Image (spheres, protein in one colour):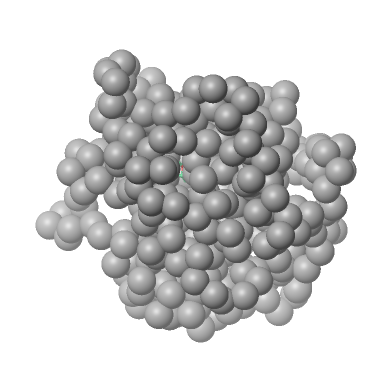
Length: 345
Ligand code: 5AD
Ligand code: FES
């Protein structure tokens, strides 16, 4: 699929035609990754962050929230719960928190690998290469870092640099692959200033980067952030931050990268709590990420408002998601659920 064809789908409004897009994406998903939905347990280990991303509710500039960092024992307890719930992977995510030190993480990764059969995914921001090397050596399998938008000018506008170090997430992703990580990335949909051309280029960038995991979700304005203050301009070129646009991007991503692991994301579920996750799974996605974070910390990890599962327990999310998966005729994946084969997407 080329840029023009992707653009046409992104602008398509005809419900019948869109039905064919959902169908094609679903068939491609069945052919390449099958019916299993893999569960990745998400542990939000710290909401402390040195960055000031214009959209993010846990940005260093937000003084309204209480900050936390989980203890090693709390994190290990979550990992053991993940095993009990039948998950194959834990994802440890945090703001860019240098209190999460290289050595502390090495100890935690080693313990999880020694005490459980879990795959370990990290999502800890733009960390120095030495950290990434040490964590890979300790046994981390995957790393997630979204590039958010492939439009460099828009990227720079919403990501103030840290000191004089320019941020280049494409370079980071290449480096992660070189270090032997499975690399995951993705974008937000409907960022103020994001055009249809930008979004089509994002989807083509997924293919070019040959990503193992691709997570996309709607931009949700957070009132305590600069981007939460200004409503996106309703121009003909502005991508809307809607549920419908999110399904289009999930479906097109499946068509362009048939073998990738694609989550039906929490941001999507937050727009449609009734069946957003299910519709994502029926339109190309094959992964869900149940939240494992202890309930008392969840409210402090509101990167956007109205986030799904804020008041639920890990147990509630585990049974809720298995039920949702079975209800749409899919199976719960067993094992780590990594990338199936390494052919170009
Ligand atoms: N709306 C939607 N998604 C957001 N993220 C951060 N802030 C928001 C927001 N306001 C997404 C970013 C980030 C991921 C962890 O969460 O894409 O990479
Ligand atoms: Fe958390 Fe449904 S996944 S309550």
